[in-house]
Image (cartoon, one colour):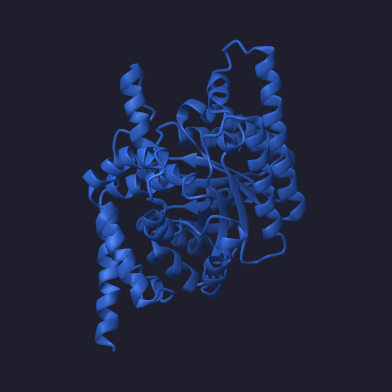
Length: 390
């Protein structure tokens, strides 16, 4: 039996000093007023070049990021691999607007694939379409009824080339790539790109994954429709299943612009759709590869039970569990200890550039009920266990 309460396994890779540092950090990000203050003040601090980089790098950056460059991540990659946990290198730079920046980001993503090639410690790569495309362009293309200018068509053709270049390299190098989900007002564009790549590259094996955010009430239906298309088009679906990371922003925008919120009415509905998706995928596994990206213990255990009931090996190449670096180690390391395939997202990039990612992590820990409390209780439990055994 897997127990996610086994803190000895969960935190074996952490020193006593690292345990205390993580505990103090989660105490801070659990304070919603402090997170709100930080979100307002950090952009100002960077604008006026105040000396905050060192503080950020020693605290929240150290907890949730692998480093500022690919090579900076080597120690994290090695450490995770020692405990049978893979690394997904995530170049977490976003919000650029220039074509040269998009090309540079595309090349950086290719660099992560090159580092992963033939390296068992790095089983996947990942990218955000907003890292290689202007956000406003994706938003305009989201509604297919919008009138698109010739220059916008040409601009999007370049975006398509970048996405295809990444997916082509993933297929040739044998390292699957995740296309991350983003806000609903650009997700239709991303879904069309991802589907076209899956149709092209997922004929025999799965090299391209799209991401499905189940906090949206329409995603289970979308998944079923995608399965129908995959069967009809004779390609396989790569599914990264998550609950989602933009919930508060989605609700605020829907209220501000007076349209129906795409978000589930409550957490129970989200959990039910997530677990229904797991059941559907495992029932139809011949048509899927799955990355179960969740910090939810119940859904993680459900998937282990579904695999057992279907007689599917724990280390089946079509199934992987994934969590973010610095979070839910009790899930990641206990699953890996019991022979399941597990990989951690390891974001990297210049401190200033990855601040949007880091602030989302802080938001997640304050807004998800019980998230911070669970992390704190497990860290405390392990620290006390070690004290007793000294």
